[in-house]
Length: 357
Image (cartoon, rainbow, N blue to C red):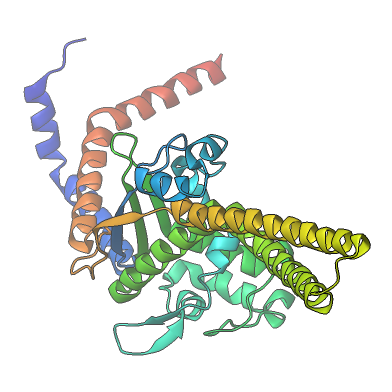
């Protein structure tokens, strides 16, 4: 079937009033939606992680620890990261991570200082159609048990979330985004908020907490080994000094005695002292090894782009939203006049014909 373009233009011109009415109605709906849409601002931090190879430790550490007979290259061959960069988006949206942000202080554009939780629950824009559900939810028992979380307040246990806290967590997690580039490994952290200052501050906070989280994870084993060997070194030092004093006291007390029994006893004390010293020396080397591994395993991140306060909202401009609705109404009017009305009439006629039979 060939489409008659001239006939379509004539038909649209004849029905121009209907086109204008539908377009205006959709434009009015667009104005209503625009007035009830929230302005959202984004702030992004871009990090370049240190490209480390778990099978290789820097030559400076290797040279330093080689003096103590420690091969860091051999020991680092067994290090395998369970949390790799591709998992960072899951980390920043996990309940424990998001909840750790709730009592962080933020400064709003009007100068007020609140916790991030207070800002998120008190300063969010509510469209007109959301007021009934908000009013109904405020009458529930869950709201009576709900307590605000201010700056430095104790954070709730993520294992026992109430329904409202769980909803707040999900809404807040949607405003925190982390992307890891597969091409260059750059980490982009973006925070969305209706206040540009809060978005900027929380982007910095998320970046610092993520760095601390990864650093704590990668150095956890080394720090545990260092603390444990430090305790062993302190105990070995006490035993070594006690053995040294015992040997010295015995030697001073029997300085002019040449009995074989005394000589054997002195040798025994000297041997015990030497064993204690060797143990202390070996543990000290292990302590230095654990201390070196803490530094070797600490990740280094370079900030490529600092967070900044956005001057323009990242959400769809309200004027563009009105234009989009008006254009949609214009297209709907054309489709209805050219195709929809005829198709509806033919469908009704077919239904009547079938019904008459």
